[in-house]
Image 1 (cartoon, rainbow, N blue to C red):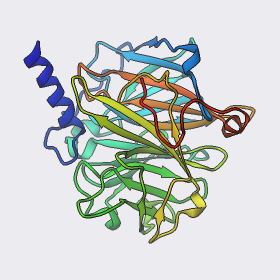
Image 2 (spheres, helix red, strand yellow):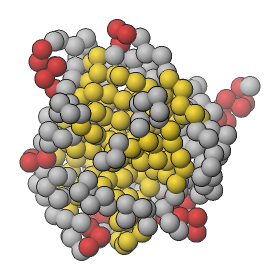
Image 3 (cartoon, rainbow, N blue to C red):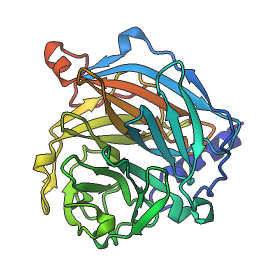
Length: 341
């Protein structure tokens, strides 16, 4: 077993390492395959951390090889989620978090003909009004606009992102409520202090030119996805890897003011949010926001299992209520992200 465990650990490391040549193939989509959601136990006293309340976690499983590798997530207006895999697949989740929750495999039209570099969607964003979707591809530093039915409209490689390294490109990408688009690279380049970022005044696939900025991630963390909550704040999901057998993952979320994002400046988080202690431990790479009737934001997180036996495909639901942080003192320090368990 020791040689096998060592091999699997190396596989996970290669899957997470920027610039690696280890790439999972574009996997065939099996639209009729069953997907099972199994609730993950959460200790009642480990659900709350500051403004975040952990309200549910589910492990996803399927006999199909289509399941896994999810690194992007959006919440759509029809009470559904859409996740994208770095192996070229999509997962639509209807009625998430309910007893009637079910999922099905989908694909962007034409994905089967693409190679891994052109199918590695690391981030998704969308326009709630029109339903249009945009995907950001890490391997080719490309952005693609899609119809609500997932048909490609236009694909571009913005000049402002042209020198971002392969496998460390636009890991985080979001369309803001004011119409701007924001992309952040996962890795800080050697000799630099901050992550590279690009802000577009409008849709980059229709000609909007990007302007460069820098993103200040907390030390040791990498930005892996971002979303904007209904109240306006931008939340960036962070990850740190602690290598071992098996590897452990530390996740956190930073809160930023979109009004402070200006070309040529450093975009700095206003607050670092630790995740609740009851969070299952895995490689969370996708985050999406939705809104309840009372204005409370729901955050959905999805994990990338890297198609590894050490990891799981997890879906997690959190309530985000900044007012709760002022009403009660949360255990631990929000300035020092705690290890998710």
